[in-house]
Amino acid sequence: MLRAFSTAATGMTAQQMMVDVIANNLANINTVGFKRSQVDFQDLMYVKIKEPGREVASGVVAPSGFEIGSGVRPASTLKVFTQGEQENTGRSLDIAIQGDGFFQVTAPGGESRYTRDGSLRRDASGNLVTSGGYTLEPSIAIPNDAVSISIGRDGTVTVFNGTTNSPVGQITLVRFANPSGLSSEGDNLLAETSASGSPTTGNPGSDGLGALQQGFLERSNVQMVTELVNLIMAQRAYEINSRAIKAGDEMLTTANRLIA
Image (cartoon, rainbow, N blue to C red; front, side, top):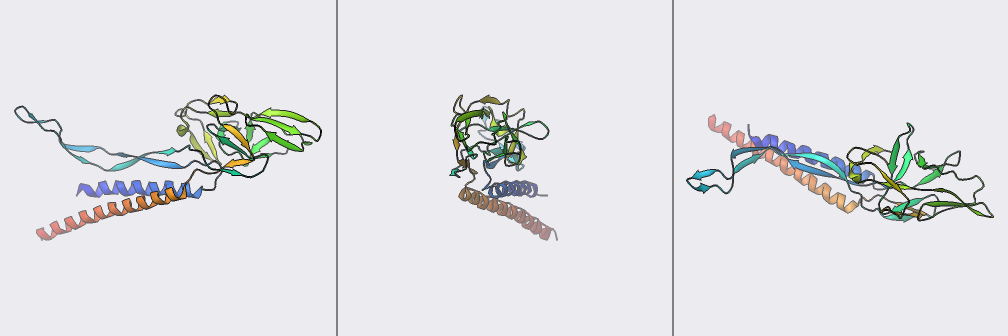
């Protein structure tokens, strides 16, 4: 059987996964703090018919070899942590991170999770939680008599009760040596892995961490035009690989006719 069949099949499988990733990016184009993913590909093992550098005659070395590849495979999906567009919401508990860093929250099982989603709420006890109900860490409670809430660029949370301003907590951020190594958990949450490294905690605006902007939300960094262009390229690559299979089938058909 022609090697082109299996080689082109790997290309079709790879482009199908590419389309799956693009579809997820486009589906989350309005998800707060979402970071787009891109697929990294690797070529597969090569069949070395003739080694490069072989001696073809006395004192004569071949400048190149003869290798036939076995196709392609998706190696990984990489999250791209470029800054998303900031949207002015005017809501006091909406916070955008301008720069590097993540909010730390506590999952129901007590595990730490990380997010760029700054759409905060108050639960029944007055604690700040994410839109999914996960408690912000360190925990900050807003008094019931608070008339207004002010969040500084350095994360200082101050409430006004009608007469005086009182600080009630400090929002901190965490950063990772390799944020692309974080594991996506759904609900706008990321989890630490051995690839991401351990989190480093600090106040916003210090130690390389981004500052906070109250009344704003960071939108998804997905660019529709870029994704549509990538979608067209993946579709065309899929079609070209299918044509390679068709060409191989036609060659086998011709060979069969010669035998007949």
